[in-house]
Length: 239
Image (cartoon, rainbow, N blue to C red; front, side):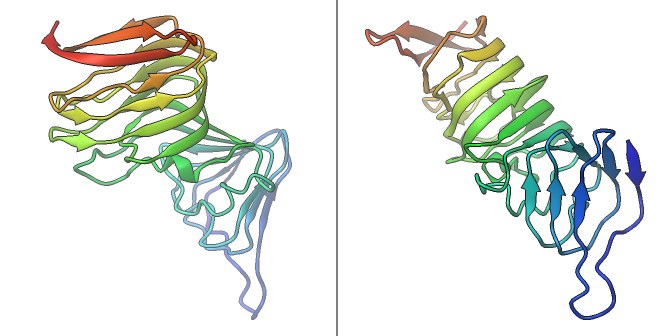
């Protein structure tokens, strides 16, 4: 890809605002802490990779139908990504390890997409906060929810899960609530969900059962209801 490592900034004159537009299918990489304020457009078929959290400028909306690849970083400017009219592309977060509920760097996945776009995760670990709703989540690697060593409560709703990979539940043993996946009919791979000692549960899965369920520490029961929904509850029994 074409790489720009310097700082992209607005002009010196009043009203001299700079915007970035990516149209090439060769790909563009931004690695600087940019300060432009005119927004970023990624055209359909184009790819923009950022390796600096501040690469998308300090203001301005992100628009278009292309692919924004966040390699090892989370963007500080997410303006426009929840706009279903002007952003219909993919935000891919890859090779990122964030904090836990005890630390920083939450994965604010609900800020990265909308009903007409996709949030993609590839080899990502971190903490998704309670109340998060993700419209379209795609896996192209692994995702791990990490709650650290203390009790944590997080109820995360994923309206559509697609792709292939390993979807890993909390890494700690003292975790509450869980993931609610409304539709996993386009997902293949493993769902590994662990419930902790405070009555944790994986919630409700609706759709086609993923290829494999792996259970660790606490027994998770998968049942199919009369209307074809998959539900789960846990039993406080160490396997």
